[in-house]
Amino acid sequence: MNILAITLLQTSAGAPGAAPAGGSGMFWIMMILLFVIMWAFMIRPQRKQQKELEKFRNELKRGDKVVTAGGIYGIVDEIKERSVLIKVDGDVKLRVDKNSIVRDFTEDAPKA
Image 1 (cartoon, rainbow, N blue to C red):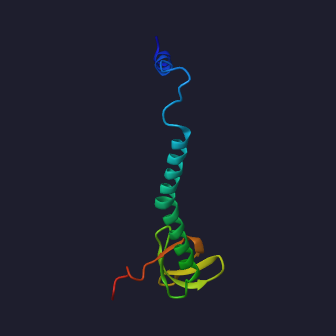
Image 2 (image 1 turned 90 degrees about the vertical axis):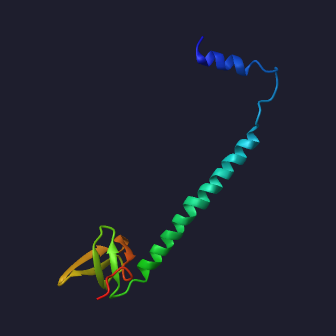
């Protein structure tokens, strides 16, 4: 006999017409609890972080020291609606998308 047949015989060996143990109510409670836990530990903190990043990008001003998603450090020189011109080194300036600015490194900058 194969394993499937043995399993079916064992499950049908109970009393005829008996309800299976652990009804569907317990299943739904567990699913809702799982969703609440996922929301509390994963979705909510991520949304909060996205809102903070959006606020940071909207409050950019000339002279802010920023880091791009590609790891380029620079100082904001000009801000437009969708792009930012950052001064990288000397006379080198790069225009990057505003969404690629990920953080402020003013507190990380070495003090001279």
